[in-house]
Length: 360
Image (cartoon, rainbow, N blue to C red; front, side, top):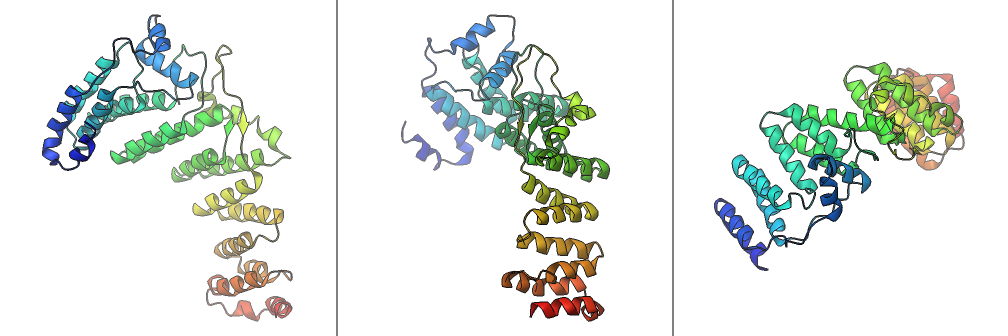
């Protein structure tokens, strides 16, 4: 049996299904005494299997241990093969067999639950599959849970990747958006959540909402505005819709991981990517004010000003600093043609001429 993995790689793909079936049949399954006692005990209450799995997900930070079973290892490999080859009926049969082996003894592994949801999607039951994925990731929870955790990033990435691989980019974005909203509703503040939601808003043509999200991220990172800004998300309709208000449910502790300097750069880059140049310039200026020796921010500010038709100011930024390093000066020389765009009159201005004379 130890030689089987290498043997599998040499077998024709058409024969792999039979090969895996033999391995599954000949491998040892669960012993009669093997069970997750906590899982089995909960099942004896009125909770169904899905509720128990969801409760354990949140109580154990989505780290569910798989039973030690040789057969389960081969069943997983066989299922992966069947899913890849789109052998739907055989895959459903394998899933049913695995669930039968685990029934009332162990919670289903994450890979099994995800495979089943993939088949729901392939069968055209997209709405049912998306709802299942929201529960799988931890975005939505049942009414009987006593403790909840934020959505699990690893599962979120797995689910989004699965949706994209099935040609469901819109559904993947829908899932990511729901997860980011849930994170913020649970006061789990990270830059990536605000940037992600802002990007979705801009893509949907909601510029005001996108800019508001970027500003909120920056305010949450700024020590002077953090406490005031912390109360704002709870008032947003989409955050209210994903909030947990039941005092009997244990919520995760609030966390604010936003760094002000990083937030300013991300806000500028995101705004610029969606042609919100006034906001992009303002955030880049604030970033540069935190560290006037930041060469990258200086150059990027000049680019933004030029793109925003403020070329005089852009040139002033790149050559107006008398303390600029030689490296920055050479970067400015390299960038100048991009900024002036064949407008030689800009170089002829007295202001620019005076600034250049200070440099060289």
